[in-house]
Length: 242
Image 1 (cartoon, rainbow, N blue to C red):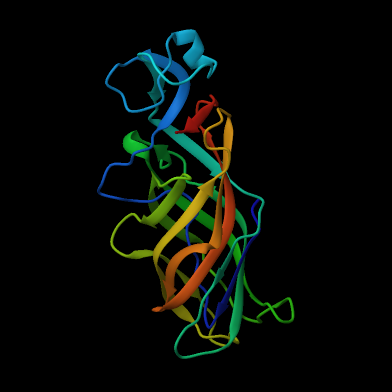
Image 2: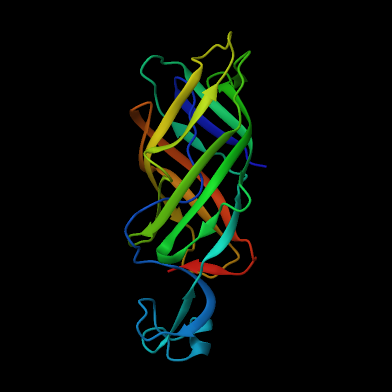
């Protein structure tokens, strides 16, 4: 179960946990432990298949790891936080969601370092972060975010952007007598995150987002995001990003 905490000035908004979009190709790739003979490839070269599989003596040769395209799953037990503001109110709001998951059949790592997913947050509530108590008579419906990503940079980062247009998602707060502004407000922009131990072959990798990587707005005002999610290939095999 994921417990997500989003702190905002005004009403609430949620951001993604997943992948991002770009029209251009990445210099990085998602790869499996398996190797192939590919003289023209751009990844690290090895002299023999055995050395490639074991990551021994990299530098030259015709062998390199095979780029992978696979369904992924993801979840987190970490707290995530989005900090922003809306123009018409200065009331602080924390949206706490008790469950999150990559919707089955929507998460994929793809060729050229790209990936995508639909993330569903449920069991969400509106809290006053100053008192730690929920706002009375407020409800927050389940939140869905469709996201894409691409690997870039050195050191490697995962850059998130909306799957379509400029909006990641919006959060709706309902309640005629709710103590905060009700309605929907959008989260837009992009977010750069770290892929922990990206170059190490493992069954699971953690994507960590911090405020320093945020280029986001909430209701057209600057916003920051932090959070983590653990990503696995649906096959359960080891993978890396190089």
